[in-house]
Amino acid sequence: MILGLETSCDETAAAVITEDGEILANVVSSQADLHAKYGGVVPEVASRRHLELVMPVLREALDEAGVGLDRFERIAVTQGPGLIGALLVGLSAAKALAWARRLPLAPVNHLHGHVASLFLQPDPVDPPFLCLLASGGHTLLLDVQDHGGFAVLGTTLDDAAGEAFDKGARLLGLGYPGGAEIDRLASEGDPEAYEFPIARVSGLDFSFSGLKTALLYTVRELDAGELERRKADLAASYQRAIVTALVARVEQTGADRIAVVGGVAANSELRAALPDAALAPLDLCTDNAAMISSAGRYVEAIPFARYLAVDAYASTAA
Ligand code: KG4
Ligand code: ZN
Image 1 (cartoon, helix red, strand yellow):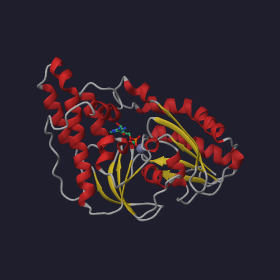
Image 2: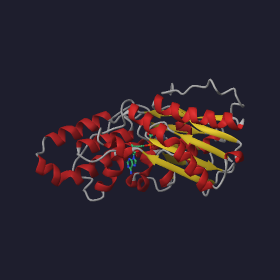
Image 3: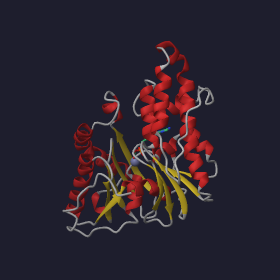
Image 4: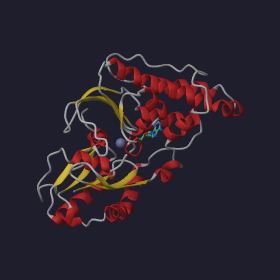
């Protein structure tokens, strides 16, 4: 069995999975409410909250799985990328657990974790495939040839897709995080009411900052009453532009096996637009520790005691 911890952003998460990818417990405590009043994640607030939540969340995962610490073969933990103070809480907890039980530690790249959400039971998807990873921090097209890693084919030049959702939601006066809010409101609106621009970027890269600016200018033209009346149409049109941009890039690759992961993979319009793609299960799209445990099966674990000096990293070269 593998125990996994994830604290890279504003979810404190612990999970227990078996070696063949069966999820025995997957506990996620979101701090979204705590950060909502700031309209985004405040790193220092997140770190402090992780510190309070990491042990209760871990205990809950062990209880749910009905196992004690003596049952694990390794501990998996997100090493980066993410908020450095937040990552350090999970990494320190994982080191302490592994050290106390003389277990190896598997440091996991958070992005590899999102991809590995596809490798879990009951319907595991095996490589090779082309993977769209769209989250709050990243928008990537990945060539996934095996379980252990990926090659980056395209990335965003500015905002991530989830960030575009969150910033758009803020302009529309919706809550944080905004993706799910826009998704819900868009179902009541006309996606063709407004024509928002889709960035022309060469190759397989993405750009979403122009779209966000277009929404800003559109919203500025409306008074409070009009904004309220047109909100659903704005949400639907804005979502349509993001989804169209994502789908266009995926189709441009010509790949026949396609997978979609990350928080934005929860979006209903995106899911409907790629009916033949392997979609991460809804509860594994946004950050969780089951996906980190899953990736932890495929990385080289660091043997007992040698990991005490391992550090977290905020960003990757990719
Ligand atoms: O993967 P994730 O939990 O965290 C990162 O690694 O960044 O992704 C969070 C992002 C947020 O930007 C959130 O607004 C977006 O995923 N998101 C959605 C939906 N649910 C979450 N975006 C669009 N539609 C959704 N239903
Ligand atoms: Zn994530």
